[in-house]
Length: 182
Image (tube, rainbow, N blue to C red; front, side, top):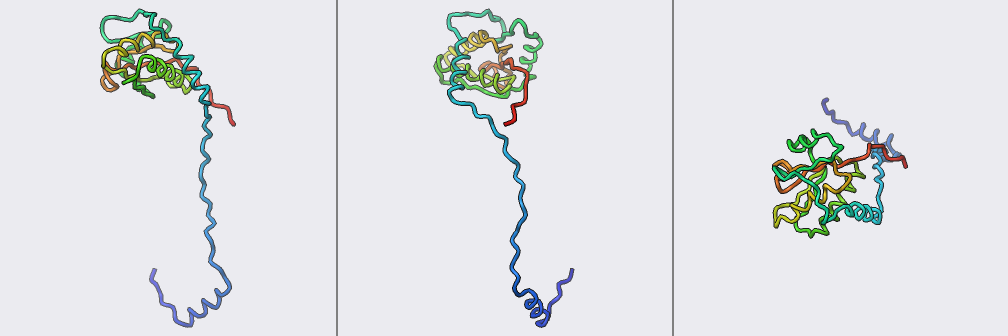
């Protein structure tokens, strides 16, 4: 569209007609979606879950694990095909736990917290990185995990998820139900 120049008379007429008016303010409302209310879990409850879940880990109990090949375990009531899928890396871990530099007591507590979190948040697959080091956590972690009732299976992780310095773990979760509306 071509811009036309207004004459002095037209400008004066325009100002006369607009006298007494005020500039409009922007009244457009911007819709901001309401944030989901996250259900905050009290710290006391989280610590209690951590302690409850780490109480399963005994240093005296020695579960029967396969001694040949990579570290692996499958609970008696779990389909053996799940172990094969873990080995091949068909499951992608949704949560990772790094135990590097922790004492055995700290590692047990962190494992307990991980299992509680997975169970509560409906996380089916986790990766636990124990590292190589002095092989203490590498030897103990599978023994502890095999004792916990929520652990369905675990297998040495594929190279993409840490290889022989990590484990992929399947955690039993309850069937998912939507949270109550607040």
